[in-house]
Length: 556
Figure 1 (cartoon, rainbow, N blue to C red):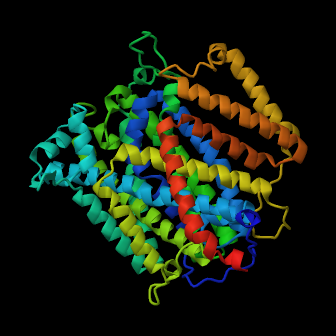
Figure 2: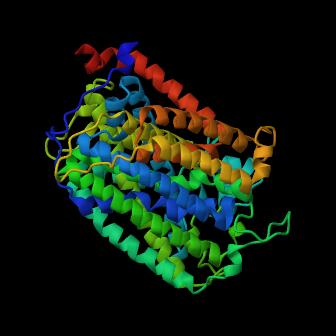
Figure 3: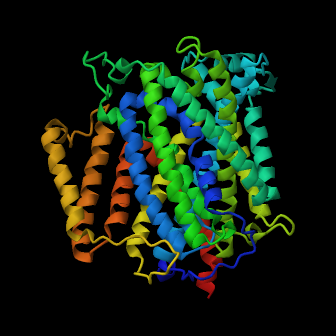
């Protein structure tokens, strides 16, 4: 049993690596912007706006706040452990081997499965752009089998999906429906990651500059078409104008779509062994990119919800071009420009995620928890070549049989869980000597402050929304029952944290990050938790069959 929670000791001065160190601060910032501003702004933003209305801006603030404190925790780990592996490596140092494996397994969910969603989004924008240019790809070659089948069985009004199901050729008794653009872009990005991080860096920086220029253009042009009445739409049931027409539960139901926009920033920590002076460079790059992206997301959401009634975003996969369509602002040239740049933006997300996953496997293999093949470094390109190819396969195969909505929820819950453990891990770290030029997470004693903030906030919320607390234990309500149950456990866990903080003098910054990320988990449905649990059950079977027996820490 002790082996399961035995911690690995890392030296903060060990920066030796067989990988190629070429990345500076602004390369890290650009990779951060590449990962964060992509499918979240150009695709999942539409679904988030539809669920939460204009009030989804509050959720971006909450997620930005939670990710800001989490980024500080990542930065603290990155300054102590300058090796590849991200949260996996950090968990190994904080909690021990079993939790490290669980986090590594969650990161496979985040990077590999996240890239499936991003590949689907890329395909949507690519085919949409070709349509506007007068070129048509058959619908059964631009969507997944599962999406088309669901649309047919559920009586969807999505013409493209219904046409795909209706017109698809048969192979035996099976309809041939394959998202070819998604498969092709996955193959191309895998090749780019295979040939080297330097080539990937240069390619990424050019695309990020182009992406930021067009996002600024969208905000400036869209600002002229804002109708402020759209920020307080009328709820059809209550006939009351509100910034949150579906209530706060409606806003929280959009947490998967909103949080998906932020999950890329932690991918930067897997680049430690390819970063120059990682203890100094990585923390700066992560924090700068996160602040910039939060400001951009809030501005974009204000423009979208101000230009178009939030209810029109139902099922819209390309929201930034949608607002300029003929039925909305009717700015044809902007519609074309945004469609093209969305392809560019989403390509950069694919690149960063596809670089992240092989380096997680590389780190796990180095510890003996996965096959030694994953440690293979290409003699010429100095990249984890075998792991990169396997990542391409892991992303490519599910594209054939999954759909976007499932992948979106599946990815977000795993990422938030990883963030929770990173913040909790910082609380477990011993104090360190302050060295000039290194990032140091400021220590603020949370003994009194955290309990006062949480309990005081709870009391304040009670006087503001007493009805919510009167119905808190009514978990059978079909609309808000799950959310109430989640809030109950959120309050219970935080009260326990208050007690331990008072006793142990925990640091305030990781505490706030931990509490914020726990709150984001309250927006997850029981289906999310079921698939999350099933995924981890599979991971534990693999660990006990292979990882536990081959662990280098155990053998040592």
